[in-house]
Image 1 (cartoon, helix red, strand yellow):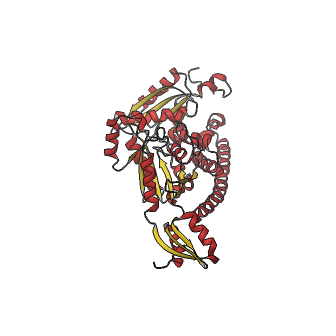
Image 2 (tube, one colour):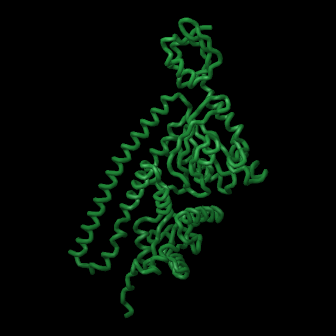
Length: 435
């Protein structure tokens, strides 16, 4: 019959399962966007989706003058996209822009069952697969629940087909949805409590690190810029460093001994990305506090990326959002082994004072180490000290964290000339003596 409703898809049908892992990608180009900008974002979405093992069968950029409240794009473009997805035997349409819960429901209803998701869901799913430590797992779970709550109605859309419009039946469906919403809110509250406990533990660990009077540097930057590779190269760490977005989510801190013998603490943080879901910015503030608390930031930029300027600005914007925008920044242009001299010159003009490096060849690392040395020592103070033998513990602390220029012991104590880091100066000023 002409008015017969389409038969519901069987979720266990092998073809339905296969289609659910095949997708077309849709990017948007607004009037203020250039073709190159829209294509660059679509390429980034392609890389994000590929991280999840989804088969991408096609990708299109839709030009729009204004956003449609129903489908984000106009009805004609919507029909074109649906026809393309069906011709490619895809069950997924993935948008580079954020979709509202209502728009997702409209797409799935008006397309005849195709699933529509957006960039935010893709990033969240990647984070779910990559989180390893308890803190990262909780942060991702919180973000996922916050993202899921306003979209819960979509999960109950099957009731629309089953209840037939009766008022009592509609109320029953709404009651079940309200129960599920309450369960999610309860889960959110529990995750927040658990996360608060883990964050408190991390704060304690951070305080313990601060008791060791070493300057702290956090490595920040756009995802896949080479942050973990830099940490590994400088400290001999074994942090996962792969050529893919969000290869690692968890902050890792290592001690770095500089050529002068001075030590500092170096932390690798999660990478940033354009259009990062707001829930993740909030959920990962605890992790990113490593950047807020650091004395200095090392901003790693992928020199080989044509989008490096936008990537760098994205990083700076997120740092402002989390309250780390006032930290001193050392900018590194990484992957110098992949570019020519013209690109180097252009990048230096765009990033004055930046250091060109390669974590593969080692280019620029001596200059970086000297810069770290200069930063770590800029507030040092040369002190003449006399430490009585009864204060031997103070002497041990001094040897562990200051640069000793000379030392001479006598019957009652030790006379020392030392370059003392800023954090230790208040401790040792009581032992200072005149020349």
